[in-house]
Image (cartoon, rainbow, N blue to C red; front, side, top):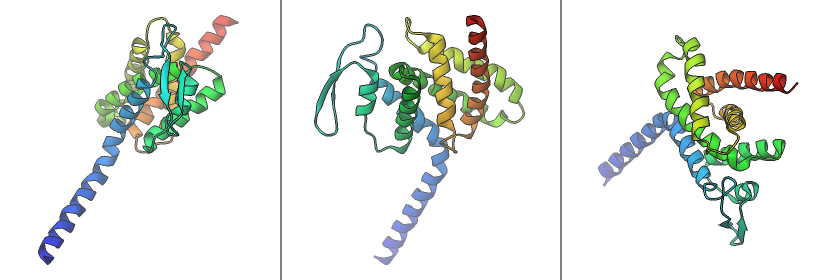
Length: 201
């Protein structure tokens, strides 16, 4: 019995060590999964032809709505990554007054692409920084725009996705490669905002 108990403890210890080693690598997958699950909450109500959805809150109350903000406020999650993501979208929505659904859809596309790119770029982040800034960040913005449904303001969605991704990445230290990409994206987005301001002037 003593030997079995010891073996069990060793196995448990190894499992815990393995989980600790995988945490950093899996954080990106967790983040993408959380953003995609959140996007699913809005897919039926999104856009001008979206439907009303019936949301059952954790309290048991039912809500019939197609307002992104009401749907987002009804989302409850125990996953810390998903919780931070919901908070980040709420903060952005409160600040700008609109775009909750567009933002959830766009950020899911942006994070999926950014995390995919980060996996390939992780080894060359230091030596190929210039290439990453020009090539990967451009691809991130382009792919995020392509995945936003036609009829939505794609340029605005691209900027929102990149800005949210940047503020969100700072909350998760494990996303080092993605955070570097986000920093580069910020520079590109700020350039777009300045250019848009000059065009309007």
